[in-house]
Image 1 (tube, one colour):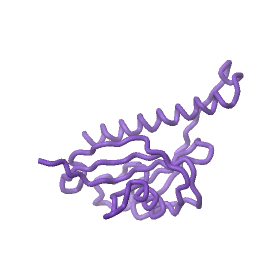
Image 2 (spheres, rainbow, N blue to C red):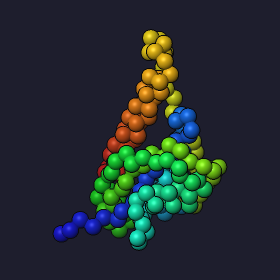
Image 3 (cartoon, rainbow, N blue to C red):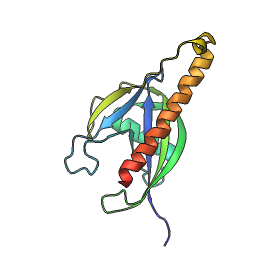
Image 4 (spheres, one colour):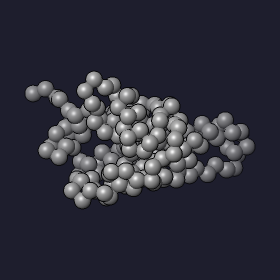
Length: 157
């Protein structure tokens, strides 16, 4: 049987300094199978749309933001994720630059900015800001990898 999943995008919008990520708390629709969970922004591809266009459209619709720079960070397969048990295949993006003022809520729930803190001190802090920026970026990348793994585990459970 061919694998014909629903194709979707999921994006994590970072603040300009990389210290915060925009999430939605899915608390609007009681019938939502993901009610109460926190997630990035995204949704299904429309006919004739590529994944980048979908990601840009979804963020525009859900948060009123225009994406200037986004990076594909990976993909994830969600077997049985749909309401009727459909398989989904997601393209995970990190949105590094954007324009606009984020909404405070949308049809799915309350938007919130999650603080990501990295404290660097001691000898590593003496090496300069370029190294610190590189370490902070690596920590952010690791956060997203861990977050994606945790989401996959909770959805599988």
